[in-house]
Structures are given as structure tokens and as C-alpha cells.
Image 1 (cartoon, rainbow, N blue to C red):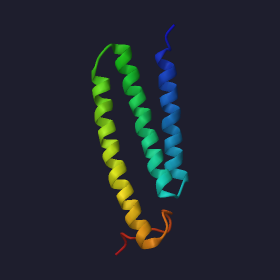
Image 2: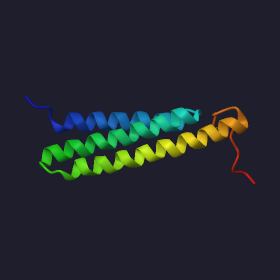
Image 3: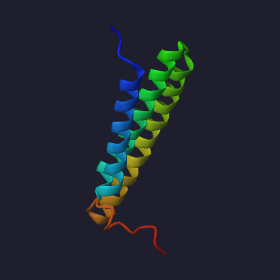
Amino acid sequence: MTVPIGAYLALGALLFVLGIAGVLLRRSALIVFMSIELMLNAVNLTFVAFARQLGRLEGQVAVFFVLVVAAVEVVVGLAIIIAIFRTRATVDLDDVDLLRG
């Protein structure tokens, strides 16, 4: 018994929508970065589902590159968050206006 591709796509869509809601509704920079990671993982799920359905390997290769980009994003994002926290003592996105001139 196999799981149909529609179930994977529905789960991926649900995870992506939850990620979008987290980015739009939350003000904490950490929650926003976790929501972006959730959206990337939702896309990874659809890549793997389509690769499995088509019997191709390109989906898994794309997932590998997306995971590398996500890891780099986490490193750079957390470095920025730590730098902002050291100067402002908050990670609330509404309170951060470092880029204003």
C-alpha cells in the first residue's frame, strides 16, 4: 500500500501556508526564520514526492541544494539576529530599524 502523491502535495501545501502565516503574522525574527525554513521544507517534500512519482533522481538532487542554501541562510540569519540583539537587546522586527539612514 503506497501513499498517493496528492497526500504529499496536500501536506506540502499545508506546511507552506503555515510558513507564510508565520512570516506574515509573527514579529519575532527567530519565528520568521523558522517559518522560512518550514516553507523550504514544504518545497523539499514536493520535490521528493514528484521525484518518487516520476522515478527520477533530480528531485533529491534539488533537495540537497535547497538544504545547503537553508543551512547557509540559518548561519547568516542567526549571525544577523545576534548582532541586532547585542545592539538593541530585542529580536522584535517592529523595534529593529538599523537600516534606516
